[in-house]
Image 1 (spheres, rainbow, N blue to C red):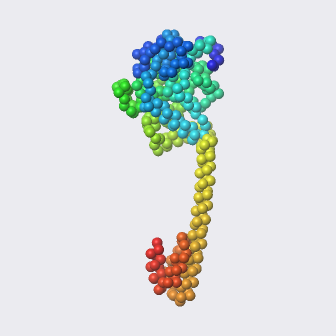
Image 2 (image 1 turned 30 degrees about the vertical axis):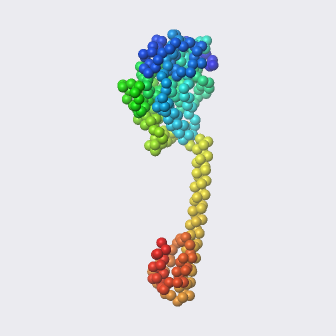
Image 3 (image 1 turned 120 degrees about the vertical axis):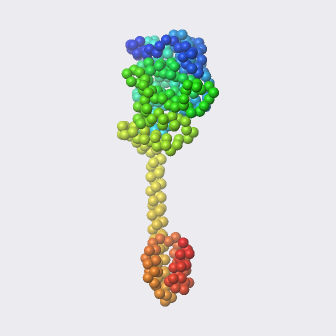
Length: 336
């Protein structure tokens, strides 16, 4: 348990009156004491000690979970290319504690990300308001729920700097008719959320690009290019890069070694092909001279342009069996 801050009372966020079930669409309210919280296995969206009410999300579907997992996969790719870690914590409790350390409020998000992990990031099972650094991005996947009614305002009062609300493309009978698919980015300005076209924590990553990435079964080339661009922007600010990531460092070193080996092999192959061409030229000239055949200008030109051959033997055999230079060149073309 994190140590309570001094002047804890002054740091308590004002997230409004105790919750009521209808303020959390797609959820239900039950009475749950503090002693029962740790053993409870349901998905708690919000809990308030004042009335001991827990707001529970209905059973999550694969569509709901997929967006959070895709977010984690994309952020991992960004972190690897940037060359420094990004902490991802799914299903963590966000907690406000009182002066004695008792729990006063509890929130849960689908995913949180620390783009710039700090020394006071959480190391335990919860993020304590006023003790731990708040995550740079908090993701909510609204599939059968609607955080706009009440929960987004609670996030605002707690001071989370950036909240993404994703409504997946997949259609479901429990999805509210008022919810259209898409992603909305809410950034904190002067203590209030305003909608932004792109992320501040991940510079240049637009809401449309994020929504597309979270709804792909596999990352498209367009998404990969976007993630590379965002990672490069972050890397430029930090002075890091792919070689600072242990896995990519090994992969890139291996790729460079393979490329060098392939280049050497190709160089050797080209050198041997040139040697074989030189042998073929000398043997053809010798055969024509020995047999008393005329070396025409066309044949001399062909010999001069012969720079690489797979094997010299076919040319040598033709030089000793052909009728003349024209017959030789005609037969040579049949070897192509």
